[in-house]
Length: 310
Image (cartoon, rainbow, N blue to C red; front, side, top):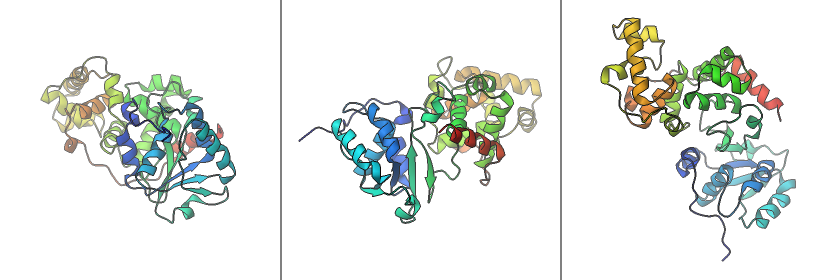
């Protein structure tokens, strides 16, 4: 029998099989554009599969329908993947004017695309350009998706980049970067970027290994008093966290900085991700999120920028 997809492929943690199973857990199918598959084909072989292809392979193995959007290109996609010794990835074909929402019978499906447009905006982007980026239709996996650009900013923040450093890579002012991250945090029921990172890590949307790999020193558990200050600042300003713990501002700052040093983090956002990764921060210590809100104008403006790059 002709060999097809390799079963064992070395991948980064954010591209792991568990991530794809998580994406498919509440979605009974996948809608993929023919253009996205053609874009992925040059990077696919029998020994390495791009994330998009691995996601579709997981769906097929699980017996889930994979709908190809763009029937007029299906022959070209089939020929390209056959030429590379790879199997057909879809079970049904949709015409360009056929709505995926209708074809998925209202069950909900995740529409996956390749985030190539982000490469022109933020380079490099750890964990994004080689990951799956998509929007959800029907019953969503994440109730509030965000643009590739904003997601790139969030990934860079998890990796310990400051607002100024992210701004240099994204061609935005630091204030605009901060506004974008606070905007997506609010739209997902979180009060600060650190709060958002905690919940996205716990829900499987962000891999904390990104933060660990970027640590400036080998992470270790902070002292309990130092950790308390870091946790208290997850969803509130540092001054408010200090008052909550009955500490002076200077003492609270010193203890927070000591927690960051112990965790090998450059910023509090990176610190909370590392803390969750090494289980220094218990999951039940993360403050609960608020009700989801609709994304505000900042998120829409950044999304529009990325759309304009198509």
